[in-house]
Length: 299
Ligand code: HEC
Image (tube, rainbow, N blue to C red; front, side):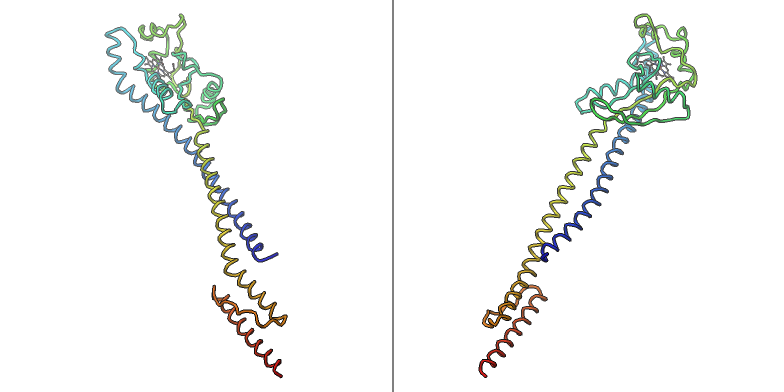
């Protein structure tokens, strides 16, 4: 096997090992990062929902409760759950590309039917009901539009004041009952103090950050591969010009001289120090040999 092939093979072997190690760690880093990004988005949505709820109960509710008694009309805008749900529906319908992001106050027996917990949401609510010590559930599920990460927190009846509207139906404000008596049946009553009645569930698409991570990984691998190939070509050309070609010249000269052709031209003393020293030494030997041959011929 010649020097260039041997050198190239060693380089390729080391490069392949390095590429595999870099690929493994960078893919792990990128995908962990993508997963973390999804979790952060979910957490931010949950915290935003809580902030909207707080703002509504602190600032909107007191104002609207006053007007409700004067006008004898119930304003759902005063309900924190309604405000949080509406804000995220607006975000969902905006042009910001949040179509896959969702927030729901999923409740087993809701006042507003759109808050009804359905299949997988019901399982989460029941999990919280059976395990009151659980404060959060997260997981991933497949949907027709791709994988979704969900983050859920329990909705617990934490104050007696809730029971004014969600306890006995007869205790609830009549204007509220009027507003919500859909088809004669009214839900959202019979809740108990301390009961877990539902869950706040945030859904965030996993596919987008994963796609970004995938493309970053492919780009990184492409540029590393290109860099490796270019390095190999440059190293091979340098090796050929600086070492292999001068050695081939010395070998050709040595071959000709050994066969008695002492008139071959001298080698150029150029290039790397080691090579020029070799060429100069060979030229000296060649000259001495030529002189010796002439002496022998003279005798
Ligand atoms: C003044 C009456 C009133 C009070 C007090 C009240 N709620 Fe509600 N609540 C409602 C109404 C009305 C809705 C339905 C809003 C809608 O249309 O989305 C609702 C909705 C909810 C929902 C969403 C699920 C559903 O039933 O549609 C949750 C969760 C909720 N309330 C929890 C509470 C908690 C917890 C408290 C106590 C801190 C409380 N509510 C106090 C009237 C009230």
